[in-house]
Length: 62
Image (cartoon, rainbow, N blue to C red):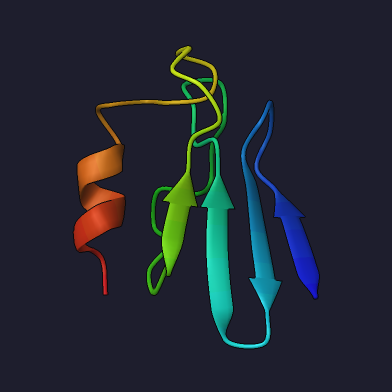
């Protein structure tokens, strides 16, 4: 298991080949170029846990 913290609440968890991104919010940085994500989990809809402007790129990245 590998855990990478991108600031504030954003964390990438990798277990084997599974990649889960948690809470990619406005106060986090460095996650924007991630690809191959299996899921994105948003724990709640506050801006520090969800940046609507950056989510579409994450969803389309291969």
